[in-house]
View 1 (cartoon, rainbow, N blue to C red):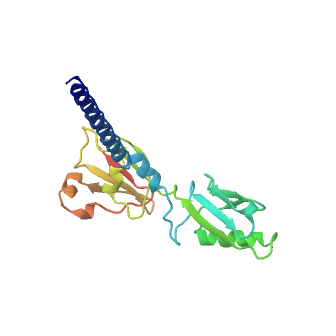
View 2: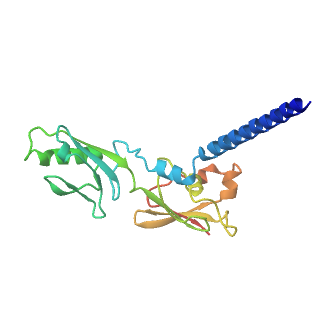
View 3: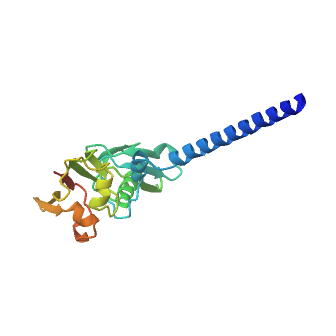
Length: 213
């Protein structure tokens, strides 16, 4: 009888240990699932990746990868300075802002012909930092945001983390400079999200400022 009692106790302890291990496994899996969801910070980091097309015009703070075929010493990753220039080996400071990647590559190629035979240069925009929009007013995170291709007002506002409790969602507007004049475009958030006039949800342009009163 005493042996049977000991065996029963050992079986009960083993069952408890098994259940405890299973619970810990479930807890660890839940933690993994939660951390796999992208956070706003990660999305913002992903948004800085280049989607520059052939007609993209380089601007200040853009990160460029300059590659010169068979010339590793001349290849480099550079950030366009506030004065719109980059420093290239052998050439010194040259203008980058205002040119497309193809135009800049051609310019560097022409200048390098003085130093090397048949230079072959490629320019790739690694990160776009020059195209920004600004969000001000009653949002959780005001400031500047990288402008993605075809980004709308709604998409930009989603990057700001939400509205404060005092936000006037019917009185939002966008300020845009066109032809030397500042235009004001109304945006009724409540109306648009309910399927109203979607034409209000315009595609943003570099330099646009969204104001949430």
